[in-house]
Every structure is written in structure tokens, then in C-alpha cells.
Amino acid sequence: MDAIPQTMGPQFGRRSWAEPWKIKMVEPLRRVTAAERVSALRAADYNTFLLKSDDVYIDLLTDSGTGAMSDRQWAGMMLGDEAYAGSRNFYRLEAAVRTHYGYAHILPTHQGRGAEHLLSRCAITPGQLVPGNMYFTTTRLHQELAGGVFVDVIVEDAHDTTSLHPFKGNVDLGRLEALIAKEGANRIAYVSLAGTVNMAGGQPVSMENVKALRVLCDRHGVRIFLDATRMAENAYFIQEREPGYADVPIAAIVREFCSCTDGAWMSGKKDNLVNIGGWLAVNDWTLYEELRNLIVVYEGLHTYGGMAGRDMEAMAIGIEECLQDDYIRSRVGQVHYLGELLTDWNVPIVQPVGGHAVFLDARAFYPHIPQHEFPAQTLAAELYLDSGIRAMERGVVSAGRNPETGDHNFPRLELTRLTIPRRVYTQAHMDVVAESVKTIFDRRAETRGLRMTYEPRYLRFFQARFERL
Ligand SMILES: *Cc1c(COP(=O)(O)O)cnc(C)c1O
Image 1 (spheres, rainbow, N blue to C red):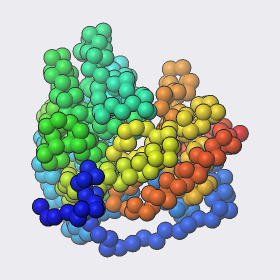
Image 2 (cartoon, helix red, strand yellow; image 1 turned 90 degrees about the horizontal axis):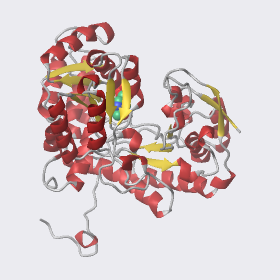
Image 3 (cartoon, rainbow, N blue to C red; image 1 turned 180 degrees about the vertical axis):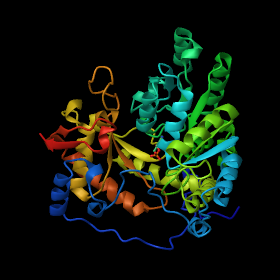
Image 4 (spheres, protein in one colour; image 1 turned 120 degrees about the vertical axis):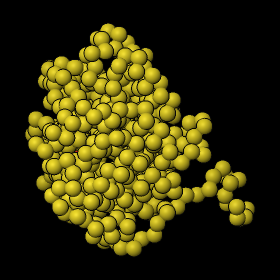
């Protein structure tokens, strides 16, 4: 190893990370004026999903489809084979998923929810239960529309924003075992396992947990399907925190983890570094045949599934890039940099910081705003008003209503998500974001909540409208 100057480096316990790329093309950002922000937020009725992107300065709404592709991916776009059937890019994608995630049969889908839809319809019999490590909005909705009933089996620590448990995404095996004992294994459709749990704050699942889960499920003949959307980020936390994995490459960790599951669905717009796309992969031939049959009804032929050939090529390349150790270290490192700034300023956030976002704890931020006045939605609105930075609500609005009683689901976590797009913003942008959060935190006592004036039936957080109380 090269000599390290004595003023920095390992005596501080670490070597700094840096992005394993340099910038070749830039996209100008516009700082939106205060007057423009007020009128834009009013026109959007306090829902950041309804803002025009042109009215946003730094966009942390989501890490979904917002990443920057590499020069190799853009070059790959020129290799698109737009044949209706049997495009060569499909075979590239199929090989990439087989090699890196290890599943036998692969179907492209237009994005993650397309895959969720097909899997839910083929793997759930109406009335069956679908235990999962916390819910995800589109995942649970597709399970419910297929007649399934979601049951949360995540560890208790996941609901505590201050718990420093290193794997808050883990399945509570005792709780799952009790559920199987009570309901019988044939009432369980499958275990719906997510690699890094988005709604818990991007928290990972340990290798030990997935291995024990496999043993438990084998004992009862229950299948495990993985939401692999952020599995590369999950692997980084295993490498960082789990004994025995410090020297195992990210790609090998992902393979090992996936080998404990029966199949997976993917939103390629996250880990896989593309602006659109997804896939579904299973090992069981019979299930694959059903999925392959249904895909032509809802997505497209099984060799394109709603994607252009060029997009499949970009995703195949993205799969390789997202599993490189240097990349994932800088990706998560940037998220943690923002988390550390906010922690230093005593802003309440979910700890430990997850893989794709910093989650502000809106309950602790605004203790005087009751949950039915939407503290997390309020926080997102305030942040936009202060600086033009766009965040997203992950609280009672996202949780929707109980389909039986019609009441709000009141989740224990009431969060506002600062989601970091991949390979898009710099550390200086993170400084600007942290300073704006600090500003609205300092004037939190004056802030009032919101009232919902329009509520859509499905996934209401996307299109709901609010007014200031
Ligand atoms: C985004 C997401 C999905 C849905 O994928 P889309 O590509 O948005 O349809 C599913 N699961 C998780 C964990 C996600 O973050």
C-alpha cells in the first residue's frame, strides 16, 4: 500500500471514500425564489408529488429512476435491438440477472410494480396471509388486490427510530413461527422479504437472519420471495457490520443472500441504475410458466415485458456497475455524510442511517402536531418553502387506510424522507440540504399542521391534496 500522509488517514479510523467516477456532462440547476416557492406549493396543495420539477432546486423526492447512467450505459442504449421478440438485449439482461442474482428464470417488466402484480396474482390464493418485514406501498397493495392479507413480522426494533440495532430489517423469526403455528403453513402464501426495508428507513437484513429464515421456511414448506430493489445496498451493510463478511465482495454477498430465497422482484430504477425497468425472477419452473403466461396480458411478450431493447441493455450494464464495491461504498457514504451532519446538529433522524435516504423523524420534529394533522407531510412542505428542496412523506398519508374499517392506518413511524439519487448530487449539495433542514428545525415551534382536502382511493400519498390549518 502507498504511504499515507500523517495528517489524515487511518489514525482517524478510516480512509475517505470518493466517487469512482468523474463528471462528463452537467445539467443546470435553478434556485427557485421564495415567492415562486410559495405559489408553487400552493398550486400543488402542499403535496410535493404535485410540484413541477421545474419548480424544484434539489430533488430528493425519490431515488427511483432518478439516477445518472454511466457512459457505458448510454453507449449500450445505442445497441438496442428493438425486435418485438427475442431481442438480443433480453438475453444480455437474462444472463446478467442469472449471473449476479442467481435465479433460474427471468422475466423483464416495465418497472417493479409490474413484477409485484404478476407475482401476487400467481403466488397468492385469496384469503392467504403474506408475512413481510414491514410493508412497502405498491407491494402490499398488489398483495391485497390479489386477495392476500399482509402481516408484519419485522423485528420490534424497526419501529423504534432511536434503536441502534445494526439489522433493523430482520424478520422476527419467533413471530413468524407463531403465525405459522397458529394459521397453518398452507395459509401462508409466501414470506415477502425486502433487502433493506424502505419504510423502516432503509434498514438491512443480516445474512444470519435470511439463513435462519430459510431453515424455518423449509421446515414448513413455505416459499420466500425477495424484494431485491435495494439488495446491493443491503449487501454493503452485511459487509460493513456482519462478522465474517468484511472481505467478501458485494457481488458475492448478493449471490449468497439470494440463494436463500425462491425468487425475487426488482425495481431496476433503484439499485440497477436505470431510469425505467424492472424484472421478476423465480427458480420454480411451474410458477415461471404461469408468470410467463400472464405477462403477455399485462406487460408484453416475455422477452421484453414492457421495456425497450435499449433499456434492457442499460439495465444489464447497470446490474454489473451497482455491484462494484467502490460504487456502493460511495453511494452509501454520501447518504451517511448527510446523516452525520444532521446528527451533529441534533436533528431527529432514524438511526442508524440507512442505504438510500435520511429519514427525518417528524414526530420528534413536531411533537405539537398530532398524527392526523400529518406532521411528515408538513415537514416536506416546510422544507420546500425554505429552499426549494423536495422531500417525500413516509407516514400516515403513505400508510393509507385499513381496507376493513376505513380508518387511517396510523404507523408508528412518521417520517419525511430525504432520498438521495444515485450518482447525481455532490457533497456540497448535501451541505445545502442539511442547512435547510436545520433552518426549519430551528423554527419548528411556529409550524402548524395540514388538513387533507382531497383523498384518492389508491396510494393516496401520490395525489392527495392539503391545506394549511
Ligand atoms: C420502488 C419500489 C418498488 C416498486 O417499484 P417501481 O419500479 O416503482 O414500480 C417495490 N419495492 C420497493 C422496496 C421499492 O422501493
